[in-house]
Length: 310
Image 1: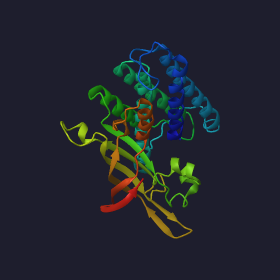
Image 2: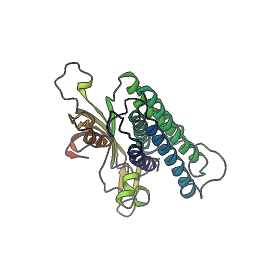
Image 3: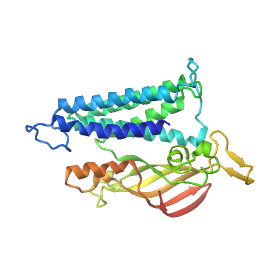
Image 4: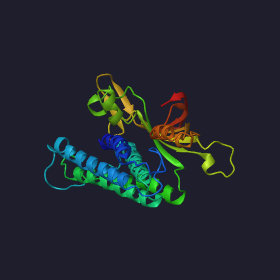
């Protein structure tokens, strides 16, 4: 559920934040709509901040009304889910926190704020938004405050913030990919009965990646900066969150959980040599996803090659 809310937030902020400049641009600006302001632009800052605040408040009200209304018992509780789902949900928290920090930080840089100030604002917004969700979980009655979730949120935001402050650029890019699996049909009530549900619930089909450009670390390298090596993590035959096996009585099949470690190639779309600012801004958004490429998969000590993995 957290990733679903965050994806909506990302989409709305991207649309609302960029759209604000249509009303605030003036003939005196020496930068285009798709370029960062050369100094703090009051209109852009107000627009981005208003968008963040509106989406934050609106989504929390909606969640409180629709998602949490029936389960709350009025008391705060804790919930240790650190061993569930082979930590796939925790990696998802890392990814979400990073992307929220990245998006809001970049929007404030677009507004003309200094990189360091914008980065810390993004960190605060990312952590604040997700901590609010954790508090709602704590009062939900069904779940509870998860320290593992909170720690994963801190880690994700820190990955973005540390790179901005130390390297002044993002050299390690968290990414996401998904492919439908046959396991959702075995437990559709848990793993999803439709594509949209399974996208959020079936961890077997999700893969989280960290893409790294070698050229960013090697001086005078002839390797293009957009060329990346990508390291992924996923699970296989994981049908129950807290148990390692699942027996399907209808078919007599036993499913045994397995971790997957992957290696593949990738592209950093922000480093492609695109000169038009509007096109570069558009293409850069593909960095949320790992594009399909051949991959090597290590599963239970066995190496498997996939000619086309997404």
